[in-house]
Length: 467
Ligand SMILES: [Zn+2]
Image 1 (cartoon, rainbow, N blue to C red):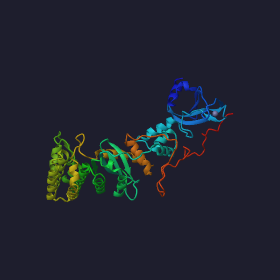
Image 2: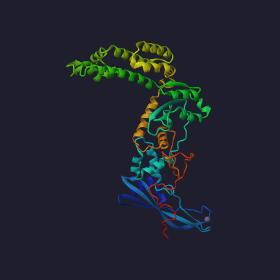
Image 3: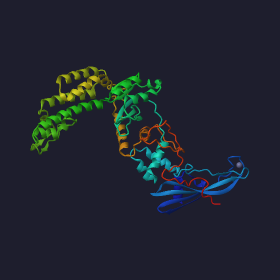
Image 4: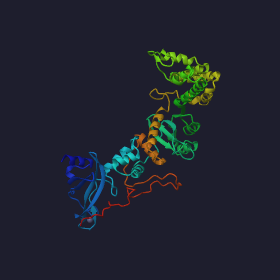
């Protein structure tokens, strides 16, 4: 029957291995009764002697949904006894690990789903009709993520999370800017944590790091200089420009709040400020403006905005000048142009840019380094890291259940690094619960049963014998 063939395929079996297969639906679960053919020429694994069938045991495995129906394998398993030494043994098991309740197909499917950042542990549990705790235990057991080798171009960044440890509120992420993958997540972004992490990496590996891109967090700079002797540190342009935009916005809002409510100035600063922020074609087809009761295009509104306040206009010009520099300057010209900008910002002496002016001075070298284009003619930036952080935030958001840093780290790297694979182990472990005192570090504490919610194990070999 075609269905049987399909089911056999989900079990990774060929028809010539199967002696008997039949399906019956009980309580909306498809039960697959199956018995395998005896292998020809089977001998005793202990002494090589001839064997005969002793009896049968019954094993059941939760299996994948088949055409939307949950399914279960009920396997009648043959047991042999040796005619010479009298010892008994069971036939080989192609369905799932011994003492597990889930078929290999289910375990594999769980592992594949764990790689999908859109699936919470709960989602995966629902899909496979198992408990969330069990999915978490599988994640802890199958996703073993050792330290990944450093890349020659690193990005260091952070992500806000409640899982941050030792008094911080950010996790630190280390990425491979060249291969666009996540290398590590650290429990906070302190100098101490970063130092401890980089210290354990062999010097020869660290010396290969040539570029490090960071945001404007001082400890990253210190650590990068200390541990990567051959690297050039670049400040991520995105963070630099953000500081500039924040300054401009602050001024715009302050001026707006000094204007009479519903005045033309207030109206323009409230509703059309994006004309001073985004790039867009100002010479569009004029449209009727309800406030001014006339047809206007973006340029008309833009000109009015720049007539409101001379500080705002100056701030706008400086902002645009920095943006142009950021977009188009070459590495060679960067020092001179940046110094020129610093001078202009200082002379303008706008309170909204005081922070930014200091930033340009403090991070001068790192800003200049960001204009190097070692690959693909791309500027040095954390843009990639930011993209990965977006995905990490997604992973955080689907999982209230991520109270466990180790588990989050493993899953995040598994999801965002193609070189990390799962391995189906037969020994299950559970990451240490948060909030307990940490004892001596011991990760591989085995737990024998695969279902923490169910203490009855019906799967051992010597139950249900039918003689
Ligand atoms: Zn034997």
